[in-house]
Image (cartoon, rainbow, N blue to C red; front, top):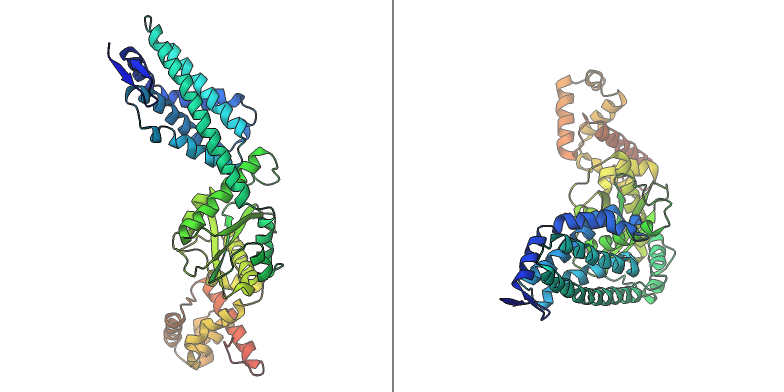
Length: 427
């Protein structure tokens, strides 16, 4: 009788290989059954996020079943046999999934596979079944060792990386209550160009609000890990400082981040952060000239995101810009947007006929004939002047939002012109 050696050095017969090959077709159904029935008996399993249970854990179960059964037929290399288990265990540690829950799930997986083998075995295959069960129990010992070691290594690395109080220190830096020297003394890098990132879920997610149990903790850690990984990949760094926090208005989860040493914002940042966060997010990025400007830039980025989400804007390119919400930003929080709005009319600053036409047209509620009569020109001249103004400034007066921006720009320029020593549109 022909014998085959597995990757662990065990020798199995042709009958055992045949039984394993028949059972491999049951991998998908076994994974579903384990996820729905077996694992549900583990305390705390029902509190895990749905995507973790239905996708990642089920995929790991399928991989484990196939790795074992295919290993009987065509043994994998020792390096490949348990790599996925090690990677998944490290992820679960980062997410805060308890180790005992993880090990119980693996033990139940072995139990479920034993049941499949027992049901699939035919009369006369008792010896083959005993061979596979013996191999399964020895494999379980290897898997438990790999999973435990990888989990504890990841947990130890996290404990060293997430120093007590670091998140609080990052928040203080973003809020402006911690100076650069104190931040650097706490181990934060604030050198080089600085980018402040704000993000918030497009639709407020109620699942985390007010949750303090295992689900809230796991979801939060998964999102924070995903956000940090996305930032590091997008910006090509490993030093992005990110925190998750409720928004001041109570509208669900949001976050802020500080990226040091980078000045360019990648176009795929919103998509990357959305994938890392686990749902679509609004994103804004504002540059700070140096460490002293972090708090102002962080506040501006957060306000841009708040307004963009309230307006239901869809981010384009690397995220929302201040220019996308200039009017709303200025009206809700006067500050740097005032100069930016006034500057929209800089391209026509030396075209008094265009400025006069705009002022009159706005004053007369966009009535072209009344504007023409007031200015003493033909209505077609009004149309041509407004078209020229649009071409030079990008403000389309057929759009309500652009009309509001043009009105604000006109009023701001006139107010600045009346102020002593201040040029229209000047900083």
